[in-house]
Image (cartoon, rainbow, N blue to C red; front, side, top):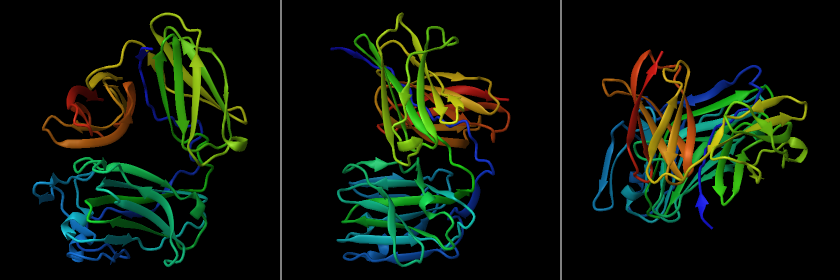
Length: 392
């Protein structure tokens, strides 16, 4: 059976906004001299030169070479100083290093999240642990970081953005986070721009999910996933032949018990009754209280692309948000860079794309008016491809 793929991955936010907004209760850029105030470094490494594996501040453009295995130059997401724990430099048996935050309070906040940028390079058993404590002594792992052997999360010049749910630690007087790196003569873990955000309002009913579609024989298959749901009744897939007028083609109930979930949930819907060469699809997410939100659109057409291309930019010119259509030959992580006409990097974003066409929204509110170069490359070394856009 021949498969024709055409995918779109999107970020989808619910109709509700955070009533009182998010506040920053911890923020560290690691741009100062020496260990930041209140932060603690612990090195339990053994064998070789343990001190070489310690969490160490490195400048933007730091170059590390271990011929013939490693030759990398580091640039964090904002091209600034960052922390690095380097197991390879230890040349020893066991690396176990800890970078621990000062305590912070979540009193008055029911919901919180940890966000940071990092590059994690795996050798064999390398693992990064994000851990939380309420007393500085007993620690709970809330997120594990690892990749396939000889693979990476992010890149030395394109740190990946990670978000960790800390809702279980709301309304607590003292909370600590720490980053614990374990390796057995492995590679390294680089870390930058750690932020904890909190809110007192109800979290988003569907905070974030991916939406994709592909053609298989004479069926169009839609797939989407959520990472959390609150008060969610379900999803109504809708189809259009012109991208303007849509009709409902079914309903998929929420898989979350009572419409509430903090774990990933996956959904599938098959359309057997379409006609023509182009079909537009969107999802109408419906709350239990009747409120609704409509997703952006998936367009299923043609065959899957063989090379990475920029399929279009809209709107162009743009004022607040630029939507970038990425045609990708495979599932990949892409690096989107925006440069001014002097070649200076002014914004960067990492995103996951699936095989086919992907629409990636980028907030350009902070950019000054003018013409910019857009450059897109991927972790599997495809690209780069370029285009231009105008910010008004």
